[in-house]
Image 1: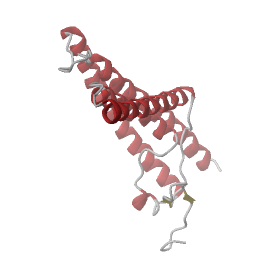
Image 2: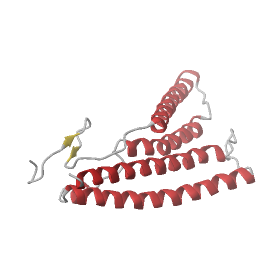
Image 3: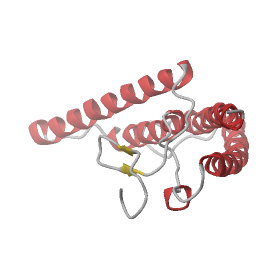
Length: 184
């Protein structure tokens, strides 16, 4: 017991959780997204390593490391949000949640997830508009690569869209869990 509240879980990173978490679990989309994020991280490591070797051994620079690394970081950040949601690690307010009964806790989580879904839908819509505007105007980055800006922007919109789908799946699982606990 921790201050009158029972510890339910201690994560591998040492985080202490006071409440049981209801999540949808990763599906094929989240597994693919997670694999893509891992691939992007490996690509960043290779790119940064190549840049370090080029600078220290050959006294030159690849000139693209910052730009490509930034795009990969943005893509990894946005594409990993649905993975975090599916694993139940995206958002929690345990200070309040731990003091509620199980049904009230699930209801409050559903309400929070619905608010998150609304915000996600709005951000996805705006990012989609940004991608379309960049596509139509043929915007490119002011860098030596002159990357079309719709490419990295698409990963942002896609990541938010996948987060929306993961939130819908999580909400449905929580509703079924709530219905199952009230029928007992």
